[in-house]
Image (cartoon, rainbow, N blue to C red):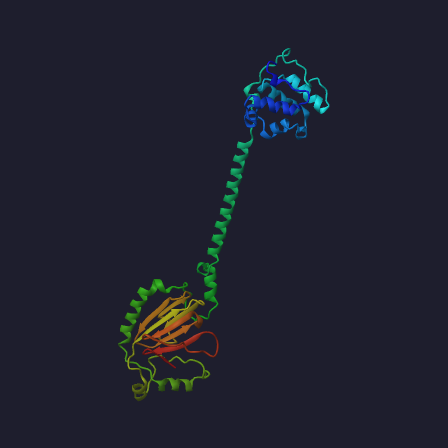
Length: 336
C-alpha cells in the first residue's frame, strides 16, 4: 500500500477506514452503491459499523470484498479486520480455489430464469372474457323474459281464454283481439251499404211501442228490451217522440283495462251480426254508421273508455244484473 491513507490505523474501526478511503477517492456513497449494485442504506450501515443490519455474515463478506475491489483495497486485510471486530475467525470463509478449478461458463438458457408472468396474464384475460360473456348472456335472458312478461306480448292461448271467459251470444264468433284495425276499411263499406238499404224502409220506433213491449214481456223492469224496427208503431206517438234524424254514428273507444267482446245487430233476433270485434288496447275504436236500429252487446263495460253517439259522449247504460251490457240505439240516442 503506497498511499498512507489506505492503511488502517490501530484505533480506527473498519467502517471509518472504508469511509475515509472512499472520501479520498472523491466518491460519494451513492456513487459507490451504484458501482457495486448495492443499496445506499447498506453502504451507510457498513461505514457506521452497524453489522446487525445484515442477518447473514456471508452477505457482509461479499459486500466488503466488492467494496475493496472498487476502492483498490486488500480484500483479505479488510475481511480480517471485519472478523476481528465481530469476534469471528480471521481466516477467510472460502478457500482460494478458483484458480485451480475451472468451471465452464453457464449457457444463456441456464442463466435466464423461466418467467410465468405472460402465461398467467393470458390466463387471467381468458377468464375475464368468459366471465363477461356469462354475465352478458344472463342480461340478455333477463331482458327477453321481461319483454315476454309484458301485457302486450300475450300468447294466443291466453287471448282465447280471455275471450272465452266473457258472455258471447249464440251465433257470435270469437274474433281476434283488437281486430278492428284490419277491418275498419271493410266495415265502413259494409256500414254504408247497409245504411243505403235501410233507407228503403221508413220504419221508426216510438217510445209508446217500447212501453207496450215492456208490458207484454215477462222480463223484470230492469231488463233491456230490444224492439225490431219493423214492429207496429203508434204513428202519433212516433211523430212526437222520434228523434229529429234517424242516422247514427256509433263509436266505442277502448280503455285498455280489460278485454271485451262487442257485437252489433240490427235486431235482437237477427241471426247474423253487423259487426263484432274484441277490444283490449286503449284508444282502439269501433265505428259503425247506420240509419236503422242498432242493438249493442258489450261483454265487459270496463273495457270501454268512451261511447260517442253522433259525436256526443254518452255514458253506457248501467245494468243491475250481470256484467254484460245490452242496449239499443236509434237516431244517435239510446232508446230504453
